[in-house]
Amino acid sequence: MSSRLTFGTLKRIGAILIAIMIVIAAGIVVGQAPAIFGVEEDPEASITFEDQQGNGSTVTVQSVTLSEGGYVVISDGGDEPLAVSERLEAGSHENVTLEREDDATRELLGQLTATVHRDTSDDEGYAYEASGGEEDQPYLEDGFPVSDTATVTTGDDAVSDSFMVESIDVPATATTNETIEVNATIRNPTEFRAQQPVEVRIDGAVFARQVLELEGGETRTVALETDTSGAPPGNQSIGVYTEDDGVLDRIDLEFHTDPSVSVETASDGNVTVSAAIPEAGFVALERNGAAIGTTDRLEPGEHENVSLELSDNASIDEDEELTVALYAGNPDNAGAASPIEFEGEPVRTTFTPADVETGDSDDGGAGNDSSGE
Image (cartoon, rainbow, N blue to C red):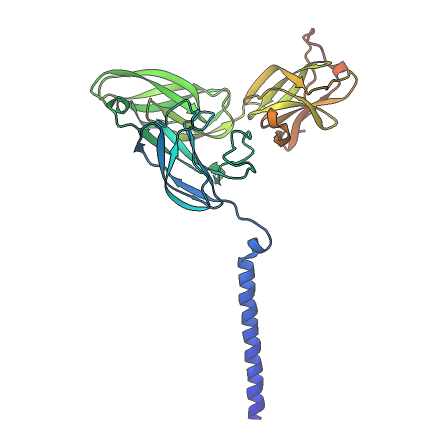
């Protein structure tokens, strides 16, 4: 009797141990589920870029961590990078030194931004600008590029004479066709009266510029009237800059009108359109869903009488049905561009050349048949 009870007890203990092992194994599987089932976590990165003295040819990024490897890119708000690091392997890196690009038109001085980019291209080397932004895109955190800013000076008296931006005050929101007031507190750190330019930059581009004169040691708050026309919509960086100093903030810019595209004139080999495009892109002319022509690259905003250039050997008949559509991206790489949508629908217009005015009349052309309908 006693032996049977002991044997039954042992069986129950064994069953409990097996159950515990199953639970532990299941926990391990769950913890490894993303890797086992091919689900990848979002790539992550961090960077520290501190104020420093330099010689205009090199800068140092104090630390950078990349989950998948990639590059550090130095820019000053222009269209092209000033310096790009060698490819960095996944992990943490200290004191990464970057050299100025041979074709860079500006030295590595002033207010600079260091951004961490992924390595996604098949080609060797950094390819973000060359691919029209399709490859080697920045690492993102909360939807924004992972970056840090620093002021780089030479330590010379001429550079240290730059007016200093003590603080700025910008509206939280605006539209892309209004004049806003940006207030900046500027200080002259020298003992002498001087004149220097003060600029407002949105997304790196200059939108306002004023020459300011300050007495030695004077601090003044100035109002900079800034026309946002042409600025890209969305949450954008906005900053006030002097010769070698600057302060950044952010502003939510709403596109000032509904995205649209309409045909002005249409004949064999010649189509002109008007477009309200909320981001940098182009208008494509399509036949049966295939592009047979595009405009040049368009900046955000409203455009009139924009010519569409037909592809080689392409022609149009006056009675055929064609479509013009808005795309975000680069017309030189139209296959990688994305349709621009409004209220969930592509922004496009279908038309027949014979039904479009040639431009001799004031009646206009064909309007949108789909702008978020």
